[in-house]
Each structure stands twice: as structure tokens, then as C-alpha cells.
Image 1: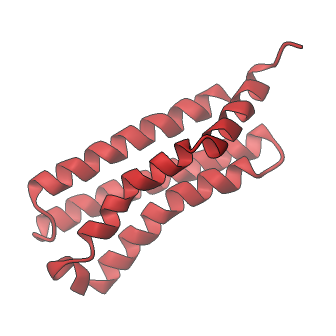
Image 2 (image 1 turned 135 degrees about the vertical axis):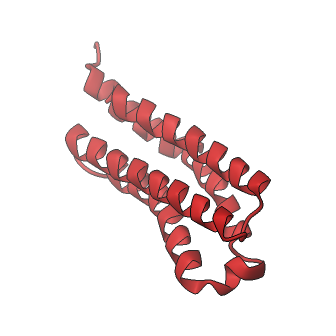
Length: 127
């Protein structure tokens, strides 16, 4: 049978979770945990906890959305995940300005955020 665009999108979401692509996304964001575990960043509990929660929220919302029962709900959770990516981006700029991460570390994290955002947007657009 021929699948509709929505069915293909849901199939992509299932593939994303089952194939390990979601694990790739998680590994991209693990850099946040490493960066926030050392130096002054580790001592700024508010920013450290907020950026970690936002980073964790990305993969959690993708997984939760994939577990929902329809494409509309899945798309909503993907939008929330993408919002969390932008939250991380904002917080990385703040951490860089405070000297918690070097400009090179910040650029690496920001590049990973852009990559993950493109993947999430692509999946959302496919549903």
C-alpha cells in the first residue's frame, strides 16, 4: 500500500528512535554535560542545571512525541524539542560571555545544536 506523508513521517520518527538516530542526538548534547561539569560553570548551579535540563528535554520530547498516538501530537513534541534547542543556544552564549566555556567550546556546542535542530525540523516537516 502507498503511505501518506503523515504515515511516512511517523515511520521516520519510529526509525529515528529505533535505529539509534535518537542516540546520536543525545550524544551530540552530551557535550553540554561535560562543559558544565568543570570550573566556574560547575559552580553556577542555576545555569548548569538549566542548560542540562534544556539539553535533556530535547531527546525526551522527541521520544515522548514518537510514543504519542498521532502525527499532530508528534509534531507538537518536535516543536517543543526544537524550542529546547534554542534555549540551549541562548544559555551557551551566556556561558561563553561569563567565561564558563571558551569561544571554541561554544562554537562546537552551537554547531551541534544547529545540526540537531536541522534533524528535528526535517523530521517535523516530513510528518
